[in-house]
Length: 276
Image (cartoon, rainbow, N blue to C red; front, side, top):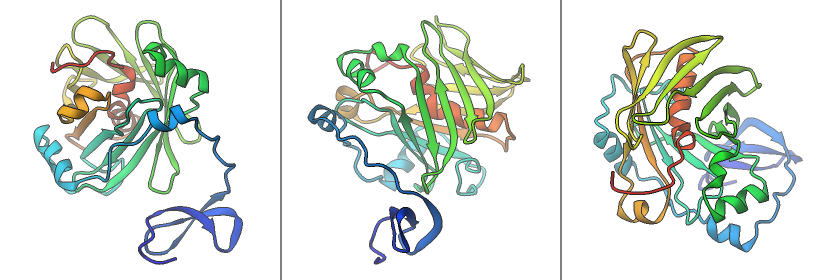
């Protein structure tokens, strides 16, 4: 395989029954069992979920950081949990049948991907026809560059308020992010083991920007929605966010803070668009 081949999972040259990850330069030690072929998408799904995002532009990502007013205290460690600034961009599609996000650091390098899993054909049909899917259960997997799951985030079906369950890849629960109110500026409580570790406080009625505070009320991070562009705003439901973490955090707070930025759009699904 030549160096021009893009990074990704490919049939293992030494074992055709499994796949091996190629990092763009060489084969790595990361392997997994060969997967069954994915169900063929219908023509409607293929058109509706056509990805319009295109390649990431480091210059545009820098503009998002600047627009959010985010200032980094350091370069970061290059992983999802060691970066002080994370840029969360939802993939732009004609019609969103599965939530998908790309997560970048401030240098424009992708550090994670967020993929919605477990969507049945019925759920996709409901989503295509209206916004009733906001009442269904949504499951997101946060994956690293090798496709390995780092976090699993579940928003159980809701009637009024959202609740987000944050788990490790092995299924062990880290904590919950629980919506506190429905009217006015939306707030969430970050809870683990029966204790509150902090809150996520909406700063405007559109629920676009949030201050994240610890249990003492001190701000430790901030989520800022950035402008997607006129065409993207008018004709799609894709959103972009920047997470700025002000100081090093430890689990369970760290995982819940990161998960909050990756799932805030799912927790507060916006059914109407506007200039806000």
